[in-house]
Amino acid sequence: MPKVMSVLSTVGMIAMLWVGGHIELVGLDDLGWHAPYDAVHHLEEKVHHAVSGAGGALGWMVNTVASAILGLVVGAVVMVVMHLLPFGKKSAPAH
Image (cartoon, rainbow, N blue to C red; front, side):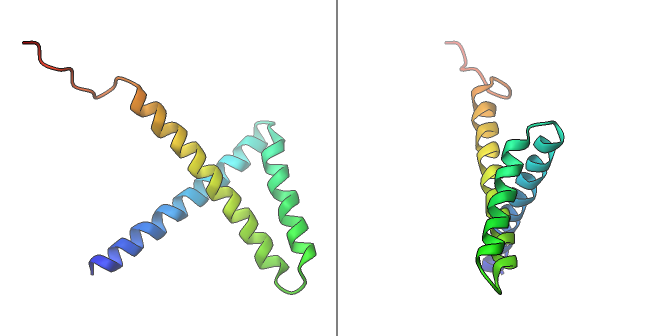
């Protein structure tokens, strides 16, 4: 069972990065920052039309990987910022 739980946690983390990154892509597009969404969408279309047969699946994979990468980058930036902020840090006791 520990191996199953380990696989589930890994798959869940990847899924959250993918979904979060896609939400960020669409949100940026809605806010008027069209470049990231347009770049991913155009790359997805190029792959879709370049490969006959499996183009749809490969295009979807391009979008999925790009969304996951964006989610990973934004998550890493948030993690670094949260580690730099003084919230929750205990001060050293005075001697």
